[in-house]
Image (tube, rainbow, N blue to C red; front, side):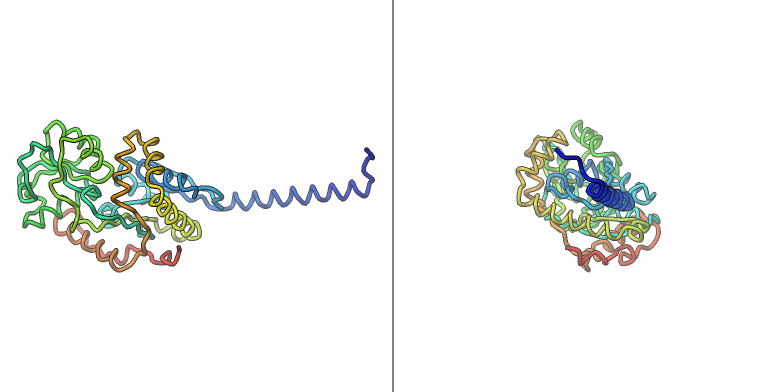
Length: 321
């Protein structure tokens, strides 16, 4: 094989240098893209996005953080440790009313069924309706959607939170107390409602239907909204597509979820079939629901300051599909 001439060698060298320069430029641009830090409970959003193929070819770095419940998720968002995450409307109001610099930037709508959120009791419990909760021990997580449901259920029959005894614990502890008969009722949400119903020995005392709007909020802190709007917009697009994929592939997605959670596939399948989550706009129904939640919390003394729901939403991402 003939050796390259000086001219052709210089041409090839120039091409290599140009190529390397282009790669370095692309690398620098990738490094310059701010990282979007995402939080969710038990890696639920990461599992969803990965299953749907929405973590492929993302033009910016994403870091995921996982928390066991809504309260630490809200704390991480408020502290700026993460940029965006999922919260129920009740935990969001609880955090924002306490001064957390958070806003709702997206909404996932869930069908409201007895498995979405409910107050469950043991099969042998004498309790028959919300009225019978008076003077009883209710376990739930403080500031959670379960806490909200319990308060809303009591108020729907003319009672107040002070008419029952609340024991605030994380879901695993609450489940244990109910099983052992150390509490009378557990106000909880999926997948726990599906789990205990499939296991048997419990029944739904009060369903969230009519009391719970079925909104899961995508919440970001003010700094992330100001500094990473492009990333947030793209992330919301991906999340909307991922939920659409999951609704069309419920069995496959349920198997993937079960491989991470250790729960039976049927628990996730039951939850997915009933909920059918989909992305909706941050519109008037969402604001009204947040305001109702805040008003209930204020009247019950859970939050001390007045809360204007419209001041805690950001509609700029509504056009993102």
